[in-house]
Amino acid sequence: MEGPWTRAGALAGLASLVVGAVALVVGLLAWRLPQQPASGTKINLTISPSAYDVDASRWRAYGPFYEAGGDLHARHGVSHAHAYGNPVGRFVYKVELGEFEAEQVELKARLSADAEGYSDPEGRYSDVTVVVNGAPLPVRRVVPDDGHGAHYTWQFDAGMLRPGENTIEFAVAEDARFPHGLAIYGSAVAPGQADEHITLRGK
Image (cartoon, rainbow, N blue to C red; front, side, top):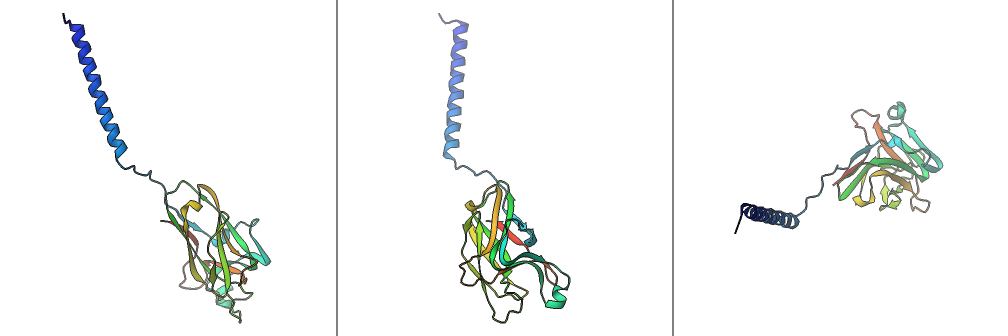
């Protein structure tokens, strides 16, 4: 004979089966749907050319220096203050990054050679390598020292960067074909010019 307790048990069991089936369907749907990546911070970093690590940066025979005197434009026709060294060596910049989301990174800077005088009569170029956390990027042959420079960009895989401290180096190697120093342009000193920075942009 069926009593009230037996009916209550059957109803409870049925309810449990329904809840379990719903949970199973929801789980299967969640598994089949594409997973959305967690949103992260885009890389959008501006570095002052004057902020190189003094202890890690080295040049032979002179440098590193940052020249920002007010007479650069009036007396020499230079458009921007600049970090410079000659003939071979490197500027090392240490940058901190948080968690980020990017596939490619673009690095951009305004550069020229530093051939011991911005009006160097021989028009010497300089072969510059950017090194990201110890990994070199392709060499760029930058314009002769002219007091104005030009913009240069490097594209690289975002996996070369990491959350935490990173190093970005601008180097002229000992075995470079054109080893004529480097100037990295910063604050504007000529009328109508905008300040320049080293920039990192994630894509």
